[in-house]
Length: 285
Image (cartoon, rainbow, N blue to C red):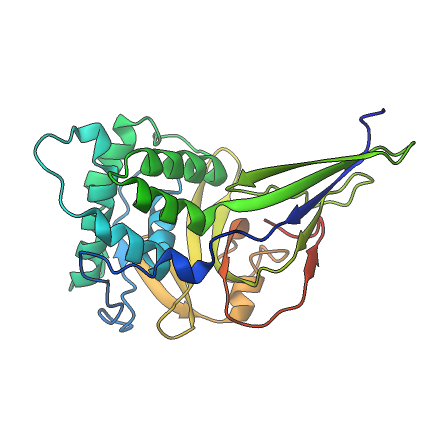
């Protein structure tokens, strides 16, 4: 069989529903998402001089209520937990500081120190998808409870059935796998990947955007608040309301507003009824 075929990627139904992920009550308090200037918990992070995407990723995770509802159950570390394994604890401590802050921005120094010890962060320009993948893997590895690990894993893991079809004999083979990130080509191609969302209902939750060049630039994020349903622009210590049109302009209109281009799209489960959606190579995911 010839291998120069095309790939059809289809999402498959997970055995555990999104509702089951967070049904267990945490031992720690939930974040209320009712504080700060916008009364939805939104707060900035201090620019710590690192030319990478740490702040947008932290702000994205902080504003995702389902994520913090699970993370708040890690509790407090004991004195025997080594520094390189304290990422879950330092992450939630940062989120609590962001929740309770009366300032416009909070410094994420302790989380940064953990990530530097784990060799996740460096002082050079990096790819946001690579950082997110490495950050996520280290977070799961250091979660103290296997049940919490599975609950966090189910929030972002994407169950896929990937089919490879021969162009000449049309023979097809398939395989199941889990992915954290789905890279899709922007330009059309004879062998472009097709993504079919079946059974799941998704909505766009955040956009990590980049401005500048491939060797030097800046990352920011657009995040949809679970509290009021509005979109907010997070640019380090600066947080402001934006419109849906502002978010859309991160794809295909670099000259508009902040001149940022979408680098990573974050989707979450939605209660809105949607039909099966097919996303082709035009998607900037």
